[in-house]
Image (cartoon, rainbow, N blue to C red; front, top):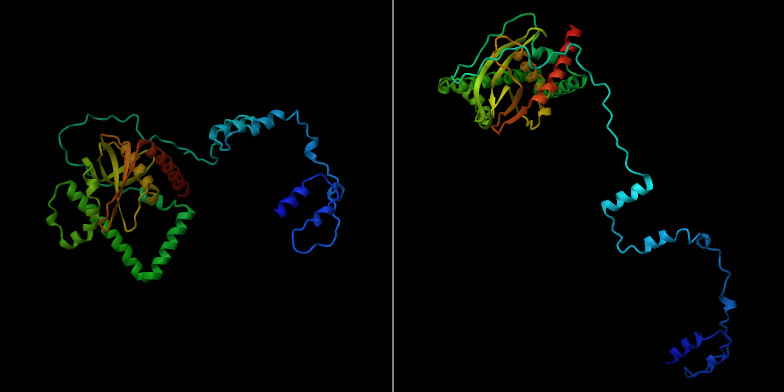
Amino acid sequence: LVRMQFLQILSRKPGSLEVLFQIPFCQKQFPYTCLSTSACVYSKKKKGNSYDQVDQEKYKNLVHSVISYKTSAQTPETIIEEDNLLYGPPAKHTPPIKAGTKTPKNWVPLINPSKRILPVSSDSKVPMKIRLQRTKMPSVTRILQQTLSPQQVFYLERWKQKMIEELGKEGFEEYTKNLFLQGELFHSALESIFLSEETAARDQAEEDVVAGYLSSVEGVLEDISEVKALESGVHHGSLQYLGLVDCVAKYRGQLCVIDWKTSEKPKPFLQNTYDNPLQVAAYIGAINHDANYDFQVRCGLVVVAYKDGSPAHPHFMDPDLCSQYWNKWLLRLEEYMDKN
């Protein structure tokens, strides 16, 4: 009660509070003390407020819009509207064309416009197997090997040195020899399958070597039909190069040049196959300009099979993608011709 009286007195008009300490709020009386609550004791001259100088009338609408906003959350629409008011509408910007894009000097179309295509026969035919003519024309493999980029050369050399450190020089030579042998046996086994030959006639040792690869491509083989060529030689007369095509057949209804590759590491994307798409595009162009073949091809397929039997990765190349790699191949071919 005494404290409430004390606060009530403080809230009154400024004046002398001598009476305050005459109130017996305890057993002993406090010494007589004079306090004053006059405003002159505590008041200080107010500093000038910069906001007082703002033209309130000028910004009345802005203040009203801010304080009348019921929610503070912004939406994409309000942000766009705000940006338009502050900065104007966004400019229509077209990405610049990449500089340095090369085009082949001697451009030849991937599809041969003058080639006569014979009607497709429903009769089953034995796949073509044209012997590769040994001429002075460079092979597709040779051209690609001699036009590797400095980055590709660096990584290949680094891989080679690493393998030599692990296996020794002789061990590395034996390793590469076995890789080539496995690839040849794998291609031979696939050829036998497509020709419906008896697989039991093959040596058991060969069967064991390619068993994992064959198991790997089982799912892909189910989508392949109408095989037109196997291990067949092709050459491009006007561009002067040749090659040996693994397979030409339909994959899910699309006629493709099919390139079979073996790998110990997974290659789930087409870019993981390095120059293989260029090789496929080169073979497509050669077939389309080779009089020995009475058909044209517009699509490609790179199949990566794995030794451990894990499902192979089939990388389909549609006509647009084949055209892109065809242009890249023409540039590599020009580079080779310039060097030689």
